[in-house]
Image 1 (cartoon, rainbow, N blue to C red):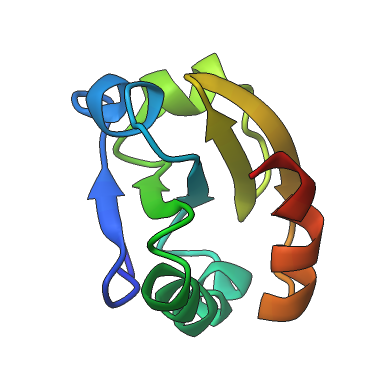
Image 2 (tube, rainbow, N blue to C red):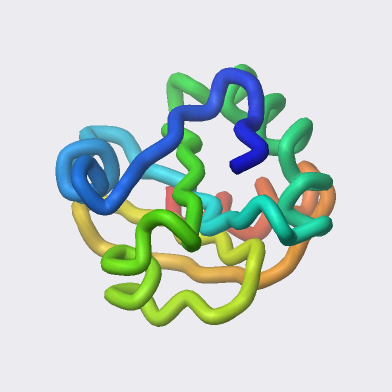
Length: 110
């Protein structure tokens, strides 16, 4: 998986702890190595992780190596972004987007 700098990678094993049990809201990118738009999102996610770390957490999940979580949330397209708050998915979006738009789309669920 192409990891974004400063963004934690979560797996089927630790998703419950890192995302469901997180105190802050969590933005999860469901991603894959073979997905060009996912690679474009790397710098966006790195910037968000650095700039917004007081408000929410940013993590990535590789769909190819974590089928349980991917199937549990019915993720079919990459990249899919989901915001989890209080252990529940509260927003889902598909496709790459600029940082400002991504932030605007999740603002009301943070």
